[in-house]
Length: 112
Length: 133
Image 1: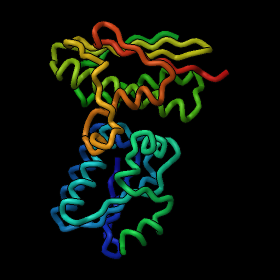
Image 2 (image 1 turned 135 degrees about the vertical axis):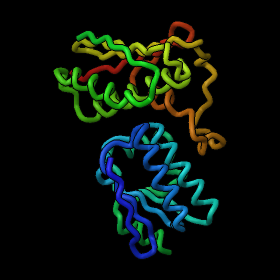
Image 3 (image 1 turned 90 degrees about the vertical axis):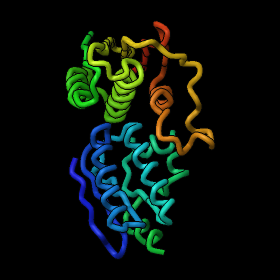
């Protein structure tokens, strides 16, 4: 899995590509800890190229949300495919982390 | 179709193991969502068996058995651990559990499969998906 981290208008945008399964969740967590260390407080994870997520991936996203909340920050997710969206709904992750259809809307809400 | 495979109690080989099983299922021509769900339950059941069942003991292994016909696909995952009480799994979508970092695996399996059974004092999980005609 490739993880690309960019700073756009004060928001840290994470673009991943592939499957967010057990080992890739560890890689995402490591990247995220680095972002926190560098002072990121508003983080958007773009799921456009993510094809699969398992419970380890869901746990990593929840942990990221909790750590950002502690430092007064926010996490959002966008561009989720139908099957992954189904998992977010089954597990009610969407009640913890805002999920947007498009990046633009997520950036706008995170920016305010 | 009948598949029988074993995997050691390590996390690292799980990705490749699941991919090889999905490849073996390709003659079934399953739709995209069914493949997603089968992949999900394989991951969840195998990770549970390796981590919680066998507690990563390198002397123990996990068995995966898959049978299918035109009506259904059944996956059985068995570990060699002490078993567990599957009736005592907390509900991960209760408000007090929503932010917990574990405990979603069995819940996900229950939600995406059509039938879920346990045997062998919780060492075996049997998951069935009815296939559309």
